[in-house]
Image (cartoon, rainbow, N blue to C red; front, side, top):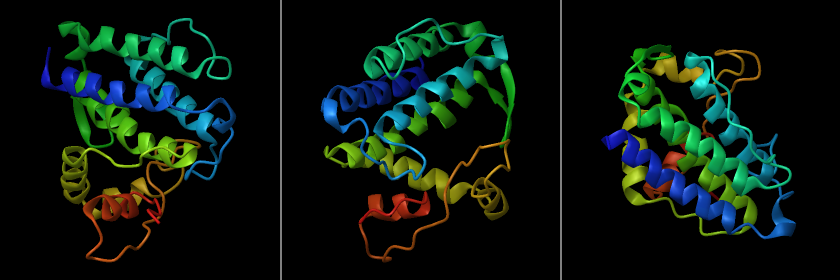
Length: 194
């Protein structure tokens, strides 16, 4: 297994555990993402798994809907991505991304895999779970965010810059400079940690 594949699996395990922990009456709770309730967060993650399959003209495998069974829907999408990551030919296919040409594995790593970390926090916040993000993930994301050129970061904050309805990050939320790194990261990503 590659480092990217291992990282994906670890993040997917954490995200799945958050789905499992959602109380049945909490699925309609508002998330920090203004357009999504808790179920909408999971739907977004699953949809992004489908986006990662587009270079191969594939769609997500048949699965229960997010409305009927969020966990089963996520696990099916996860299996589709793991199939790609486990196939050297598929995972090494080169695709265009906002940061240039990269492999499909790198695209999965930078998009849907990283999304599970941030949106795991969104799901936890919406449903009353522990909101602590693994400190190594916080450090990794903080470094990655600070490496993005300012003009690209501004584009990522512009709704529709990467296609209709696509908003990568919301406007930055100012947090104190001495706040914990997780809070500063969340603010940079457009979340209000308080």
